[in-house]
Amino acid sequence: MMLTPHSDLKERLEIEVESLISTAIDATMAPVSQQGLPTRTPLLDHRLRAAIAYMREHMAEPISVEDVAGKVGLSRAHFFSLFRDQLNTKPQVFWSAVRVEEVVRRLVLREEPLTSVALELGFSSPGNFSRFFKEHMGVSPSQFRRVASGGDSHPITGVS
Image (cartoon, rainbow, N blue to C red):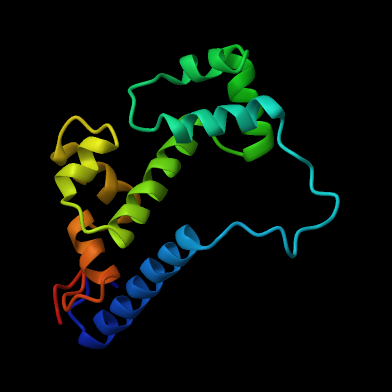
C-alpha cells in the first residue's frame, strides 16, 4: 500500500497509520487495570518482576542484560529462560519495548527537544535515537510527534 501511486490506497494507508499511532499512544498512556483479567492469572517470577523494575529505573544507563540478571540473582541462561517461558520474548527485546514506551510517553506529553529525549534515555547521539525509534515505530520521532500532537503533516506521505 505504501508504494502504490493510487491515491485511494494512500488515503487508506494514512488512516491506518494514524489509527496505529493513536492506539500506541492510548496503550502507553492508559493506566494499568486489573479488570477483565482471569482470577487465576499466573504471577511473574519475583526475580523477573525485579529485573523489569530495574530495567525501567535504569533504562538510560548502558547496562548489559548479564548485569540485570546478576542484580536479581540469576545466571544469564536462567534469566533468558524466565523471559522466554513467562513473557515469550528475550530480555533485549523487552528492554527495547520499555525504551520505546518511554519515548512515546515523552513525545506525547512533553515539549522537550528530541535531542534532550535522546540523551536523557541514554542514546549516544540523536541519530542513534532516531534510527532506534524509526526501526521500532516505522516513522521518525519528529513525524510521530507531529501526528500525535495533531500536526498537519502525515508521517508517511507528508500530505496534509
